Length: 111
Length: 112
Image (cartoon, rainbow over all chains, first blue to last red; front, side):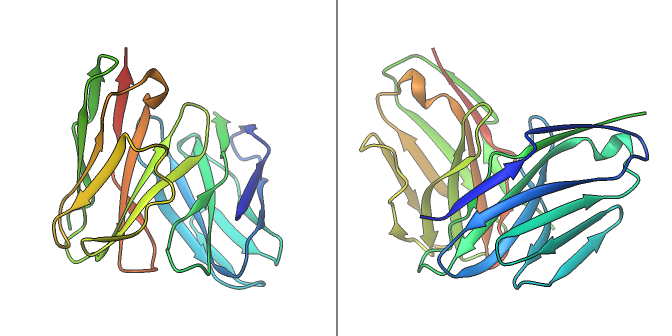
């Protein structure tokens, strides 16, 4: 069974204070690792897909990286609007395409 | 273009009643997924459709839960004889098969 563990559970940052979120995973054959952002009362919003170890993707102040066992989401010089819960999910090589999610990291950025 | 839409956005029901939740996927997406998100927990997979076929129903918690899909269009998740533990946000996602899943806003179900 695919498993995803995210840490820390919560992260409080000062505006401009860079940090990283961790996503550790076990999966039988990784098809893809996904990062989503979720604001309160809304559905998850897609950020990145990573497919193989060594891959990196960037979007504004966010950068996602992938190794064979974990992924990091780096937030550089965050702003209050980056406050959200960040979800990590893996898709294994089974015949369905379901995602297995971690519990998320809730990031709060103070001005 | 239009994203995934879900209705109703909120549903309050009494224990023992049946509820239907609706999902309209992104046009052209062949795959559709239902997930459940309980308070403070990660998303939990319920069921996956490829077209109107459901090859994987393994995530449905009990036989009170069922789902159907009309062609490559709307899907309905039905919960019969609701229980308090069914209270959660029910999220629908769609994709081209195997590709990135795009989520709707969810239906918040409260069972009193």
